Amino acid sequence: KIESNPSQNTLTTIACGVLPTVTQSLIEEYCESGASMVIFDFNDLSFEQSRKMVLEIRQGVFNYSHKKNNQVPYSMTLVLDLSGSCITTGRIFHTTPTQHLIELSTNAHVYVTNNVEYKFKCTEDRIYVNSDLILRLKTNDRIYLDYGKIELAVIRVDEYEVYCVIKRGEFLGSEKIVHVPGIPVGSTSLSKLDEEKIRTGIQLKVDVILVPGVRNSVFFNHVRKFVSIEQGGDISLYVKIDNSVGLENIDDILTVVDGVFLNRPNLSMEVGHDKIFLAQKIVLSKCNLAGKPTITYGEYLNSMEENTIPTSAEVNDLINTVMDGTDCIYLDITTRSANKSHCIQYASSLCRQGEATIWEQQLFTELNKKSKPKIDPAHAVSIGCVEVSFKCHAAAIIVITTSGLSARFIARYRPRCPVLAIVRQGKCARKLSVWRNVIALQYIDPIENVLKDIENRTRFALDFGKKKGILHQGDLVLHMSCSKQNVGFANTMSLFYVSAGDFVNA
Image (tube, rainbow, N blue to C red; front, top):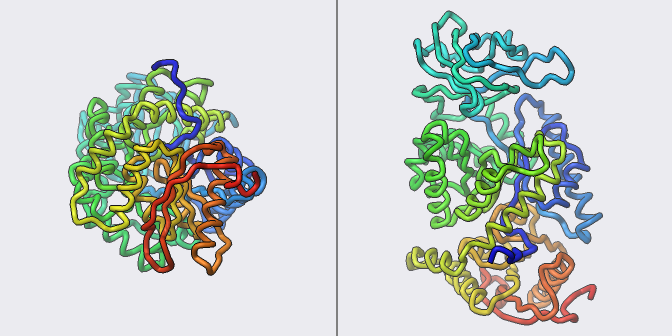
């Protein structure tokens, strides 16, 4: 019914973009608003500047954990975004302290140059781009700036620049994406700059790296080999689906990746704006079937840079993405909006509305049909766990896991309730936080007696669930753990009702 209220618990992960100027207090606001992932890049940053940014993020998460999360370590996933070989504009030349945009008027003329002298001096008359590919263009070829918002038509090509007429004008900011149809910009190997960024990310112990420009599994395997050689084997590698060739080879790519980042704006420049909805459904459905977590970026809620509420089209777009099955929504509006927390909270409420419309039982049935025997025992037990949770309307699933494998299998089959995954390692908890439904909790204190340890970790989860409003007295909880030491996976399932005595601080 229209008047029905959705769940109070957001199951979809919210990711935020952060800038090098990020502060601890801002990260605390992100945590309070419900974000559990931050995405950043190391563009134009030294190692010390990159280190300072990551330390600010970690300290902000630590502060929030101790102040407002009952001293439970908050799982905030740190994601490094590689720039790849994309073409971008330079920075706007500021004639006043408040100027951040220039206006390119329709039917006016402009030079597009690769002369580095103009890298920080872009004006209405001359725009810098970081590629010499523009010099291969011919008369009447097109150049698109900022995901097609600005369209330029080539009049002539000179030695270091291209003279263009503006077919579609708009305001232009700094370092915007440039698309040149018909000219591939991908590479078969990592650039030296990206290799250095990966080394920095490994030293700073990021959790996930986004790999752009992937067209097949061969290139991705090359990246994984490089990361492994640099001692980064514990970092998850997500592919960026940002080109039409990668979209065509999605089945091949899914066999080698840890997850997928769907870059809709970039992809739409190749497949067309009228086809991007179909591309999204293809990618997300294939990822759901393959059991790969997904992050979707679609310039969500951009109007909230200026307004307090988004447009109806933006609301529908975000909700439809949730209904299509994404695990995570990426909001880059947080790098520009003055009221960042409000944007996150609004996105979270929209995610809950979308989640309420999903028929999880049917989704589980379809996913279960596609699982081909013979499957791993941990996989099989997890399927049974999700099915039981539907039958008994469990309020939550508590899974005691070391590697996070059982929690990933459970989340893969989309239960309708939260999954409280209790793990030992912070890295494991942060990587689990990408998945929809999963709330990863790090329980540090070990006990040699396995059964006593499981009991303590279970009570820890129950106490957390009560304080966060996930569990209430009388709720039915489904519990998964190992039956004895060294089993290797969670092989025992049990059901119990929550009572006042189950809470540590009741």
